Image (tube, rainbow, N blue to C red; front, top):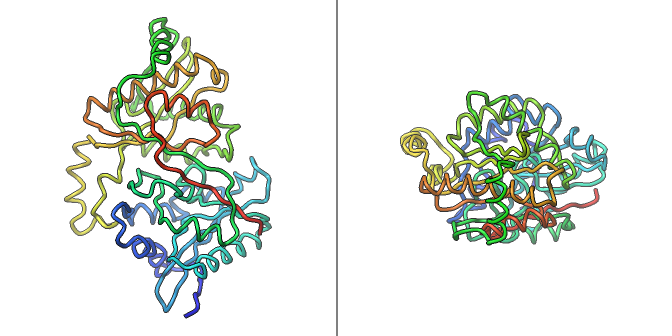
Amino acid sequence: MTVVVKPVSNKTDLRDFLAVPFETYRGDPNWVAPLFLERMDHLNPKKNPYFEHAEAQLFVAYRDGRPVGRISAQVDRLRLEYHPDQTGQFGFFDSENSDETAAALFQAASGWLAARGMKQIQGPFSFSINDEIGLLVDGFNHPPNMMMAHGRAYYPGLVERAGFTKVKDVIAYRNMDRGDYSPLLRKITNRALRSGDVTLRPLDKKEIKRDIGIIMDIFNDAWQHNWGFVPFTQAELNKLAADLKMLVTGEYVVIAGYKGEPAAFAVTLPNLNEWITGLNGKLLPFGWARLIPKVIAKKPKSIRMPLMGVRRSFQDSLAGSALAAAMIDRVRSYHINRGVMECEMSWILEDNKRMRHVIEEVGGDPYKTYRIYEKAI
């Protein structure tokens, strides 16, 4: 039967949208079902501050009345302020292994974007570059870390046969405590710490708004010339502060100073996917009973470093390398002492050679690749 694509317009449609990956990932031992409540909030314009500067439409593909694919189309006005290229985005792409279904989904998303004046479609972004990004093209044999996408091995073929081409790859690194740094990097780091030029401190949860402001000031300076950069809004910062206050303790977050001025930061988070595996997306009626002991323990076996930044004035310098390495060393030691076995550092632009070199010098192994695609509308 012919595939029919419909826009999501009510709660029933939304449930179908959320149900699609449960079917497409059936039998995949590495997929982790997201929590329905969290996904509902993320998709809700009243609860996600992304929608203060963007609009989006969700679509579901049906075959014989069954939901077999999904996609979002979105226009981010803030992104267009920084990148005035008439490019809209797609995200949340999941599909049965059918070129017909994938083509119908992309046609629906492209048509919606074209009606809003967009000339290109790019993605996946679910919803923005500061959320889940990229289509997994390498590393299917490992489960996703928190806020990182998973994918079926046939997805890239569906996207490419629909006429999309690669724009950029981003890399996820895995560090499993392989011992000390390279002698040169260790020497540079130790010298900077002994001199007192580089200082490290944890996030102060009592002054979290102040420290989030410091982190975002460094982030905007460090990342502003990176491909696809979009800053966090104040509302998004407020949400980040609330999330961090709930999720992190001790030295999950480190702020580095250089000669008394804030110069760099690193954020790590517990891998929530480790805790929700097996809940099948539901906390009720018995999910809380299984989740609460894990949250109370607050000692995950794996973590993720989603954000790290060094001010541009220190980049491409020995001081910048020392700042980055000292922060990684500090949070790594903290987590190893708590029993953490693995850290994912993600994501890193494929052409960010400087940061990739530092990560590889401290034992990072590139184990996943995510791809951004685009196509003219």
